[in-house]
Image 1: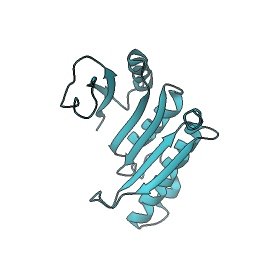
Image 2: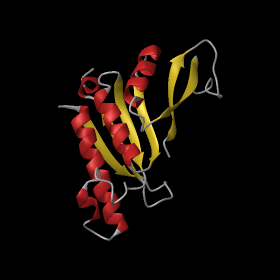
Image 3: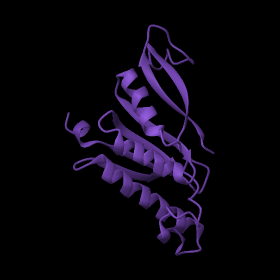
Length: 160
């Protein structure tokens, strides 16, 4: 599960993937990166710098440590990543030494997921900085028990 896509919007005279009606003059580009690679954050930073546009990190269906990698990218790529929207999925493996041990104090899967989402929310709070805004919401329209959406906006954006 280490092969994932990162997408961003770039101003362009042509539109791609039927974005012209929603986002006139924008083009969507997809770049395939290994999120768990040691160079992921550096590679992503270079791509965002090339775009030179406000960028939001979007991570959907982030299994296990992919959620942590996304939160780390948001923290380390300040200020180029202005906000993050993450939808965590599976918990990290119980035997993984980097997994928070409190995730598995309960045998209840819903409680474990709630603890996982709270852990990720705390990582995003640290990354958003003083005055940043982090929210956690459960979205009923997501047809899964793992339906938490985490959003984080850096403080500088809140005061513009």
